[in-house]
Amino acid sequence: MTSTSDYQALSFLVVDDDDLMRRQVELVLNQLGIEQVTLLADGQSALHKIIQEETYDVLILDLNMPSIDGIEVIRHLAEAEYDGAIALFSGEDARILKAAESLANAHNLYVLGSLSKPVTADAIESLLNQFKPRDDITRRGSIEKVSPGELADAIARRQIQPFYQPKVRATDKSIASVEVLARWIGDDGGMIPPIAFIPVAEEHDLIDDLTIIVVEHAFEQLGKWRAQGYEFSLGVNISADSLDNVDFPEKLGDIATRNSVPCSSIVLEITESRLMQNLTTSLDVLTRLRLKGFGLSIDDFGTGYSSMDQLKTIPFTELKIDRSFVHGIIDDPAAFAILESSADLAKKLNLTIVAEGVEDQADWDVVVKVGCDLIQGYFIAKPMSGGEFERWVLDWERGNT
Ligand code: C2E
Ligand code: CA
Ligand code: CA
Image 1 (cartoon, protein in one colour):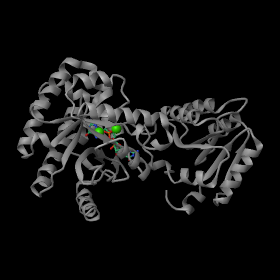
Image 2 (cartoon, protein in one colour):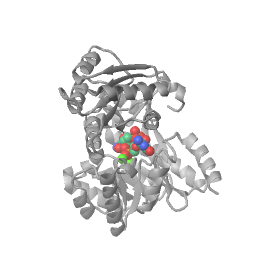
Image 3 (cartoon, protein in one colour):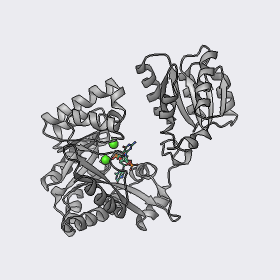
Image 4 (cartoon, helix red, strand yellow):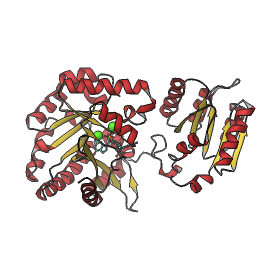
């Protein structure tokens, strides 16, 4: 949401036991031209209203309230599958607000962010700039999972399409690589995000077929781009489940050969949290992939629990720091400490360091400062279809020379 007039139409529920605070928030909202504001003094009546199907676009929730506190309200909202946006606010220190935010996120609630007291118009405005209408949101909880039958059908009909998102070099912003992200384009032209179908594919033994389709498309595309003189590499997401299949390296190698792309121009991104489940076979497969020349990236670094062990055992070439340690890092000292030490560690291990989820200049500045080599995120570009990506490359190169 970008323009002021867009958010003036939103409805707000403000819950705080402090009468003065409620009025203050109302005043600030009115200053921003927002008129639909409901004020309530306690969590119980807020829950009551919400559960009775009153809908609000944004709930501003105080954490410290006497009868039922903000954390309890969050739990009940999650149980009620509340799908409006939530902004938390409190006079407590920033760490407590962050913890409450993480908790709400973990409950799959739609958290806009947090506000410290007293609330200012600027703070509310910057929160609302991130507001997206409900149908745009791809939250885990709100996504309806597809059925395995539908997915198998979509794979057979090749409705799974590759989208591309660039990673650029921190030094000169040149394009180093492009990550392939799967999208399911339905019969009506609508787009289903991977979070709705990748887990289904993994659960129902469809992930290898899906990966092969994405890989065939993307390697063919990379072959064409290389023939046009582009030298960027390609990042492909590989589910840990595919590492149980000892034929996988040969299959991938064959597709690369068929499309005249060297394996060394491909980086396989593997999510660390699921890696170690069948260590012996995974290690066999990963080592043979590496022998063929494929790069190996440890994806979402920092979110799995056995990352250190995996770094020691598996011949990774790249480390991708999870976006939870990247976006908004400037205001989050704990996340910054993790980002900085992950980058140091990667440097010592001679790995290419990628920061994902860079959404603004502030994020960019911090990740460059800690020594990330490659940068990816909405600040540079969103994932795009092959055609859009080609147009984007031309624009980007024009702007960068
Ligand atoms: P991932 O590998 O961590 O991919 C990055 C995700 O972050 C993508 O979501 C991307 O669109 C999103 N993203 C990129 N930049 C930003 C940013 O600046 N801010 C924010 N908030 N998000 C950003 P997407 O495309 O929805 O993919 C979600 C996940 O689905 C991927 O996470 C990956 O784990 C999985 N996935 C996608 N395609 C495939 C595939 O072909 N095979 C497998 N196995 N998994 C896939
Ligand atoms: Ca990835
Ligand atoms: Ca990630």
